[in-house]
Image 1 (cartoon, rainbow, N blue to C red):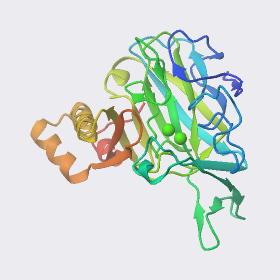
Image 2: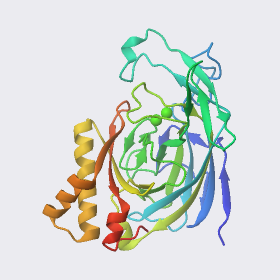
Image 3: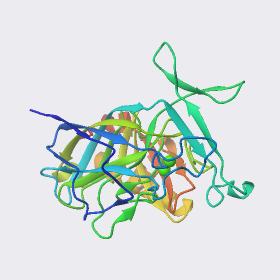
Image 4: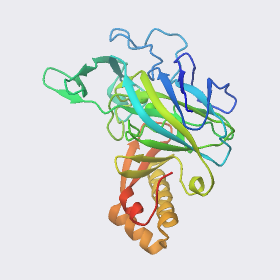
Length: 310
Ligand code: CA
Ligand code: CA
């Protein structure tokens, strides 16, 4: 029997590390609710005080970690994103240090946006007198503990982390590496909306509640998945982070090509051709300590060759 477990936003950290004490323990197949703070540690609550009210605010606090029984190094952790519920307001803040436009600003400013509900259940914000914008909630930070040194929650890498991939949404399935016993899954930094690149430095930052079903993938099925790996809206995606977009792009493309080869039996020539014909490269973000690129490939093509996602 599966059970539902809840991790409150009292259990947050600014680093994903194998040293962390688990906030909760679950079994493979359990459903877990993570309550998350926003990336400003819920400290920026007024446009009048853009620096916030907390002295020791954690940057990008991630809720967790969750210890998954039976998860061993070499396995893959499958996280089905069942729901992302947002609180009633989001916030954006300019930066004088980071982001493509940081030189535009001598000081930091914040804007608070109320989350509004339409009759059809969709949510939106009013940007100004002229414009309303529909939301597409996503998870900015989600990852497992790395095998070696801990990694701060501002940085994306092979463990996941601050990937800021706007395809990590309700209905997506994310596959992450298990580097240490139990996997130690954490998440936070929800965005009510974000465009590819996140050029300004933030999305519409918001706290909320994420419901995930967590299971352990083992053996050949796990070996073939180039984590972090995502299934979203009919496409599978490799997500890679590196010092430059060029490097991250090459890594994401190679990871997808090797995956296509492994699950279709194609050689380098045909797999390379399929990549050029059917695969789309997209920028996740250009504002974090490492840059992140994803490579998208249509899942139904892989299924034509008999592949089934675990
Ligand atoms: Ca982020
Ligand atoms: Ca963010």
